[in-house]
Image (cartoon, rainbow, N blue to C red):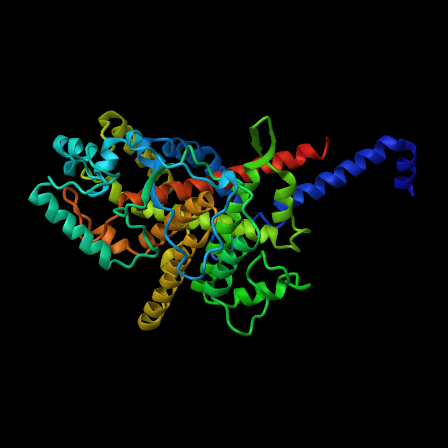
Length: 469
C-alpha cells in the first residue's frame, strides 16, 4: 500500500526512472546473465580472467602484434575447397585482401621462410640472395651444408609430426605475405548460404554428436525448434571431457569471431569514406539471452574457456622460446631483441596466472582408448582447418585460417610437454619444432581472443550508455 502511494506521489519522473532501471537491467543481461562465476570443466572464474586480460595481457599482446615479426603472415588464399564445389568468391570489396609487395617484407623474414626463425641460419650473404629471389620466400641455394642438414631434419620432423592443422605450403607460388595490420578482421557483409555451409560442416560433421541427438549444433541453423537448449546441454554434459572440450573450443572460436565482427562493423559509408565501429544491435542478436533463447551467455562462456586453453599453451611453450638459440629474426637486431623480450614478458605473465586449465585431465584413461580418442580428436580438428579453404570471403578466410591454425598450434603444444622439457639449450631440437607460420598464428590467435574479451567489456559499457540515450 505504501509503495503504491509513493509511486503515485512521485509522478511521471519516478515512472521514467523505474523504466530506465528495467531497461538497463535487461540490456546488461545480454552479457552478464550466466556469464559470471566459475567456468565448467575448470576451476577458474570469469572475473579473474577479465582482470588478468585487461591489466596484464591485452596491452602487451596488442603491442606484440604490431611488431614486424608478428604482423606479416604467409598464407595461401587460393587453395580450392576440398569438400564441395565453391560458390565463387565474395565480390564485396571489403572481402578483398591486399597482399604485401616484396619490398615491404623484412629481409630476415623472407630468408626465414626456409630457415624457420633462427638468426644463425641467416648470414648476410643469404639475405642478399633472398632479396634477389624471384618470389617471396624463395629457397636459398647458398645455404651451408650444416644448415641444409638441419633443414632436412626439420622438414622430416614436420612431415611426420602429429599436426592438428592442415598447414599451407609456404613454398607454393600461391602463398603470399599479408600485413595483418592493414587487413583487419571485421564485418565484410559475407553471409548467407556460403557462410552457413562452412559453419554447418564444422558443427554437424566434425563436432562429436551421437545419432540420437537431432537438434542442430550449428547456431546458424534455420530450424532449431522450440528447444531452449537445456536438453542439448544436458546431453553435452554427459559426454566425456575430451568431446565436451572439442565442442567448447569450436563454439568459443565462433563466439570470438562474432564479437570481432560486431565490434568492427560497417556503420555507414559517406562520400567513399567508410565508418567502422561497434554495432550494439548486431551484438544483441548474437548474444542476448532472450534473442538467442538462452544460448548467448553459453557461447560467451565458451569464449572464456577457449581463452584458458590458449593461455595454458603459451605458459607451457615458454621454455621453447627462452632458449638463446631462438631469435625472432627479421634482420633488425635491435627490434628483434625488443620483440623477444616483450614475448618473454608475456610468457611470464601467462605462467603467473593461478587458475590454469589442467590438460593432463584429458586423454588420461586407458592408454589404448585414450590414444584412439586423441587421434580422433586431432583428425576432427585437422578437418576443420581444411574447411577454412571453403570460405568464400578472402578476408574471412585469412582470419579463419590464422585463428584455426593458432588453436591447432596450441593443442600441439599442450600435448607435447615431454618433448618441450627435453629441448637442448644451444642447438635446434629434432623433437619439437614450431615453424614461423605456427608462431605467428599462435600469438595472433591468442591476441584475437584477448581482444574479444576486451571488446566484451566495451559492449557492457555501450549497453549501459545506450539505456540513457
